[in-house]
Image (tube, rainbow, N blue to C red; front, side):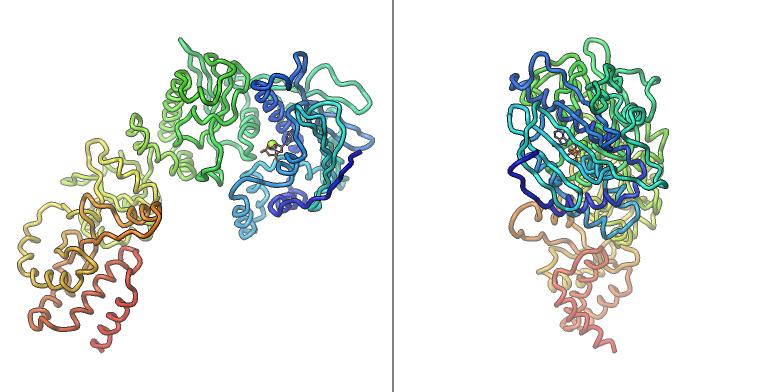
Length: 625
Ligand code: ADP
Ligand code: MG
């Protein structure tokens, strides 16, 4: 019985998720038990962790345990734990809301998609664990008492958008969650979740590795002596003895991801130091991979005892997509977060894991190219950050990097394969940066490269701009932007001869466009287009300039670019002739503006002065009719 009872609305996002759960056709309803046991186990971990700094929370002879109790007559099932528990405020914020940033956007996008597997995708993205109880129950009540408090809190909901919360009495610390089971239709083929045999099967299937004992108890009877789970830490068992399903369930437990991992790696280091790692790569990128607030890192165990859930020090940031556990016997049990950053062992483990992960990625790239491509699609943007930040492993990361390129419309390439395809006389690795493949692949800058059969890499991620700043070369070949400097494509005597013929036109264009470009010169990189815009070798590309401007507050003066003119283009030749016959022709002003604007449009940029461009275009059109 509770007092001081209030009724609350679930937060809008939470209500939506709950609705999806209740109306789901998800067939594996039994996973609610996995989720509740997982939460109980987390609560016990947290208790143990808090007790490190507050030993009074646990008695010497406290047994940390989980009990699954069922009442076949009342058709209820209750999961008890004596973990950390929750205060009234914590119940409201943990159970009544979904605090993860980006949730609203995700729900919105799922709603727009209206796909039948909305729920799968949703639960995959979050692990909306607690709410899964409503797949099996039409009413759920929760009684909890936080460790160190004497007041308890009772929470209850029928999943209908509201919940009640009140003060209550509870003799011991921890949480008990009771499900009032739904009556399922005959055809639903749902097992009887109050049956001991069914419960024990589910626990063994999903929660065998849980580090605390899970006991069964029938209401009114005595608790079993023997736990339902074996409690063996899965990473200490030889790989050959663990089934893939066991690894998958363990992954789901530690990652809170409902999807299966893409791959599982287990590593062991022996010798002077001893540590083990069991690592996973998720099959899908979490939606908050690029959120500042998202938590990453590995679970750190010291001699089988969980020390920390998100230990970021164990992996460099560019491997933050990797999940899993590390167990070390060389650290003290009471290691603090502060100390971790300076700890010699941690630094050593991090180096070791980084090497192991890079080894494994290389192996996958070699032997399971398709799977690797999928991994790259999901996490390449993160991994790539390493090329800029991890100086020691830069070349390995570059070798792992996949690039879109002009060599193939869909299949990405490695730098190694690019080098193998380089043409006779080609002495650099060429690339172009831009917002998308579509935007860059028809850029006029590529024309002469295409004609020579030189491959060009399409760098279409914003982070690529940063990467190329840090990666001047790969295997002694320079990386060169096709929009920077002069295109050095071999013999340029032809071009030098033409400068004389066009010098008047170049001067005149420069005078007419002096507010827009800093130089007008002949181009060696154009074939079919009349003009393009480039920057000097040491200047920032327009994309990088834009990124930097966005990062710095306030407006920033845009640098002027160089306009290159194609001497072999008919339009250019005619302008030259026109200028020779009538140097003051006003139409040449308009021509200059239109040329400049079309150079911007051709490379996929926005016009910086649409009005002037448009007026000039109208004049030119009017005159030609
Ligand atoms: P997650 O486990 O991924 O955080 P859940 O929906 O399973 O998401 O649980 C939501 C939150 O509710 C947990 O993060 C925790 O704070 C709280 N919670 C759930 N079950 C318990 C429990 N048995 N003891 C203490 N806190 C709990
Ligand atoms: Mg959970």
